[in-house]
Image (cartoon, rainbow, N blue to C red; front, side, top):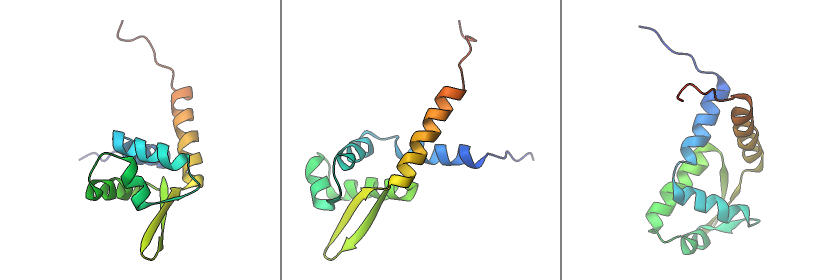
Length: 106
């Protein structure tokens, strides 16, 4: 059986793309990008979805490395992970700039 090998860049951009693949996560990132940092309750108030759903989306974004969270008992404070935010920006720009689409489907 043939095993496909993916580059580290392909795996990283796929991880970021998966995290960006839901409108609620995009809304969370838009909200956090406008803040220095914010608490879970602030994020929950911004979105028209249940707290448990917000928590799941925050976990996906955190697992992908796009946000980070700090526990400040009894709350959790979230902010953009600036290093990975910049890495994601560069990867997506590079991906779309370096791969010119040919007109194979005309």
